[in-house]
Length: 386
Image (cartoon, rainbow, N blue to C red):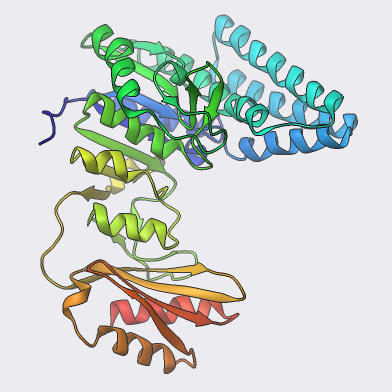
């Protein structure tokens, strides 16, 4: 049995939610709507992680012109946000320290003409550290009744030393969360920190893998036994399929951990596949919503699974050699004996030859060889909604 849940809510905001000053103001609006939000997890601003990779690549080539231009671009982007958010003098000083760290790392890579996974994790961490600093400063300005405490996630998220894909040390994270968060809490406290980053037992910066900020939020949520983990992104929940390809895609109001995990593993982009593991261990609900439209509601991912057959979503995942894995997600799929044959025949009616790969209670996957991804996707979704 899990320990009793804490009334706290952990809210994570992704790169699209902090892309610029306007988006960051929306973050403050969402946080201000709910006093139960006690811990805010922030990703790097949109595309910054990619820019940091380009910095490393330019340094590796020894191309100092490009290197300088890239670092200046990152600085300019964050300074523009700072200007528009009216960031404090201290906030600007702290931002300047991070810029210095960026330049030192970039020039060191250029000097050495090499970098390691360990170096990259330090470089990657700068994106989250810059954006979270800006958010924390703005929350102090916009939510004067909240006592905003900005802290370094590396004080809590301890990992092994497998750089770029570090494994969290769950017991240590829980101990640190108690000391850093729970024991310092007051009714008006609002904590702000970074997603994606951690620290090994030797004090070296690590990361949890690309898109690992969702995982960070779940690890924090587990450590403090939060009552809810919120993932705020650019879409109002988990969709029945990719809405960019299928305009008739609908958003799902409730889905189980197992169904959501299958959907993420089989190609959906809304959730990082490992996000739900910590939440599932302690039956913590996970909410997915849109920062730009919090009133639109979203999707709740919960422990309970429906006990009747129901199709909820379809995903398409590219495999090797022009092979595509097309999957139906839902409840009790294994109870319909001819479901695989029905789905394969339906795809064949659109001239797609499919073979069964796997059937479980929550997923049915078939493999198709095709270059017509969009038409395949639309046809599979048509089966879902028929």
